Each structure stands twice: as C-alpha cells, then as structure tokens.
Length: 230
Image (cartoon, rainbow, N blue to C red; front, side):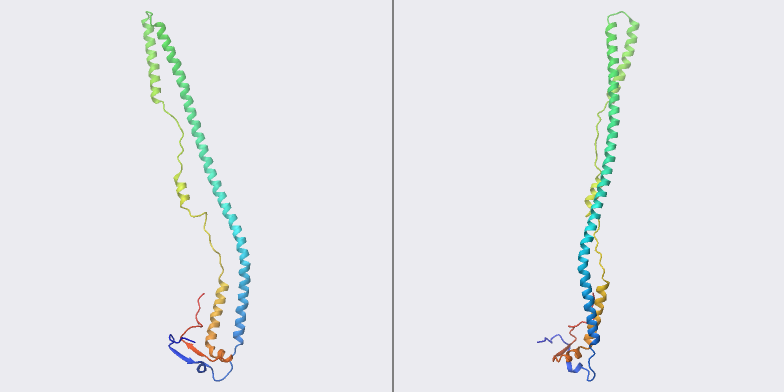
C-alpha cells in the first residue's frame, strides 16, 4: 500500500502513457550496460588499488623511517658539536688550572726562601741586609695575597637548549599524511546515472505499461530523483 498523504496530486499511469507509439527501451538498455561495464571496471580497479595501497604504505613507511634517520643524524651532529665544545672548554680550564698550580708552586718557593733568609739574619746585626730582605719579602707577600684573592673554583656546566625540546614537544608527527584519490571516473558514472534516472522518470509510464503493471504514478514524491550529486 502507498501512503499518499505527502502527495500534492495523484494520477493514474494510464493518464501518462502515450496513446500511440511503442516505448523505445533500447537506449536505456545500452545505457544500463554501459554503466554496468564501468562499475565492473571500477570494481576491478579498486581491488587492484588495495594492493597498490599496501605497496604505497610500505614505500611511505620507508620514507618515514628515512626521515627519522635524518633527524637522528642531525641530532647526532648537534650532540657531537656540543661534546667538542665541552672538550674545548675543559681543555681551556685545565690549562688555566695548571698555570695556577705552577704559580702556587713558584710563590711557595719564593715565600720559603724569604722566610729562611729572615731566619738567618734575624739575630745578626745587619741593618742594611735586613732592610733589603724586608722589602723583598713585602713584595712577594703582596703578590701571594693578590693571587689568593684572584683564585676561583672552575667547573663545567651544560645548559640544555630548551627551544629544541619545546619545538619537538609541539609536533604531532614527523610529517603530514595525505590521501591521493582520483574521482573522475566516479563523477562520470554519477552523471550517467543521473541522466538515466531522468530518462526513466520521463518514460516511467511507458516502462510500467510495458511490464503490464497496474499502479499509480506518485507525482511530486521523488522515489526516482532527477538530480543527483556525487
């Protein structure tokens, strides 16, 4: 049973069937076969595409792996440069510290000599020698005290580059994944289906009469649409 509550008007098929001339169904049959052939071709193409997609996946996966290797190589290079800089810094500090050690040794030797000289002339009545020793001792003491004030502790400190970490943490992947589709064939088939529906709509009364069916043509209720979008 048909529900005609949504129909603006109802006509009998007999009102739409031409009074003379037989319906020419051959073009429709050719059109149907053409679309069937294209759909079969599309089905075969899509089945082949399944294998192509798998091959494409393996190829793109290899590209992704290569990208990761390139990133690792770039990071390795940055790491090597940083290590070389640390080695250069350590060498510089070691040289400076060794120089300090040597200076400490020289100052200690000079201080010991002056101390021994003072002890030798301490109980002797040699004003001139005492005066000279006193002056020289004051100079070496001043040098030693200045050196002690300049002394500092040396160390190496590594400060990570937070910009690299921040940038990497903001990335959602190593690249963009895109789909590659060709829709020309689908659009062509869709247009032909629309054309066929239009022809069927125009000859609906003839087709139904050809099969001896008795029914009502439901006008304004689109069970065969004459406009399609794909």
